[in-house]
Length: 353
Image (tube, rainbow, N blue to C red; front, side, top):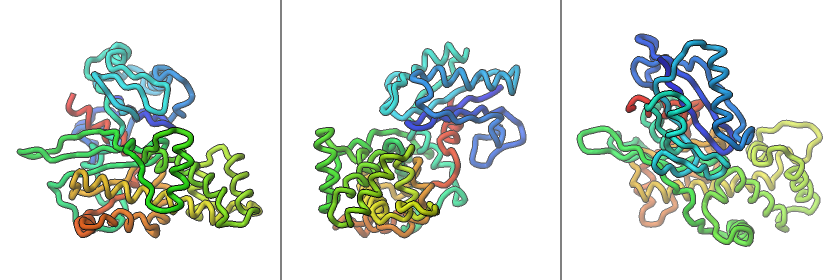
């Protein structure tokens, strides 16, 4: 028998099939489950406006690679709020319905949850080999855990201890809280976004699209020579993946000859502003939950810029909370480096079906 798991994000949709096994187990996974997925695939989420098309593509590949396998349990995490087993994805045209999935898979043991519920469940199973610590002291093993991550959007989830042991896993839409600028540059970004959307959430800034917006706004500033601003703006316009370009160039990860955008101080400044906003939001989230069990940074962006974030003001912004700075100094930030933690979280969710 097999367990099918999926992590549906704004950029990529990941599927994996795990086989039950009596002996070959992963210490971070449920007992009796194969250590490695029997088959795993990643599809661009915009390959189809219909989630079912992507799922059937994966099931066809499973049938070809592993004939005769039957899905007994399944869990799908989706970037969006879930109500009564149905999720209308926030940044995708997908509508994912547990009832339809049960028919498609031929089993009642199917659950649909928010993608940061997956991340939060995974955080409970991770160990020091799966993260890089960004300051703080020792986490309380019985303390609440907050998980947040910028990618196409800004996901937030948490795990709260319950009486008698264990944790309750909850998702949230905390990334859609109001963004409050703290300095002149953040105010410029806020004004640009407010003119476009009316209301400005933190997700509009601390996300991949937000990083692109930050860089575009800074290209209008007189803080840099005109030629430098024009070069950076042209690089953004011609890039197939502007947020990734800005992040990697800003972090000094791109090594190209002849491209003036490499190492651009504008992109560096954009990434610094991004890290400040993310750190401040992480601190607000830690105060909201009193997450003395730690704050975990997941999502698509942080693992690609680990060294930059270690040197950035993210930790300083996290702790800059006035009378409660001393409290936040104790809370560790753990940047998750494990590949596909969402699939691990989904696998754990199948254990309860």
